[in-house]
Length: 141
Image (cartoon, rainbow, N blue to C red; front, side):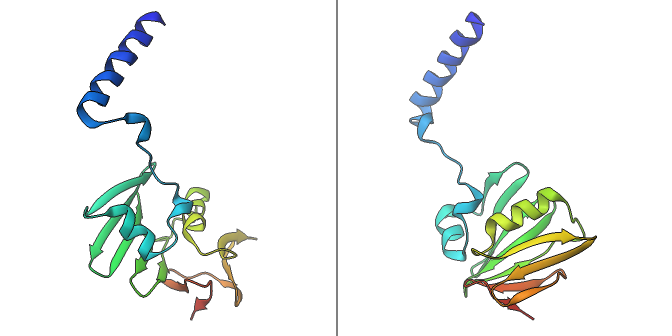
């Protein structure tokens, strides 16, 4: 354990000297990204940045930013602040957790009795891929 602590100190010193204070490096919580504006701000000028385990934020074009989990764009933010939700058929707890973290408040996706539903300000309906939700939490049909 003593060797590990020495190595850790050396690595941290090297990283601090090379890249700045590593204690200030923070990956955003998915919950801090709820809109195109949030996503754009976090990306800065970059095309892609990680935001979670196997999850990245990717600029698709000037008006669209996607949250990609494995090989699926699970949420696409557009500059008019509309979210497009997609699971590509992966109705897993992790996929739902990632999507729910990105949805507007009081909006969620989940399964009941084997059926996937989306619940928002204007009701609860069976979910279909490519559904859209407004920034104020209304489902667009």
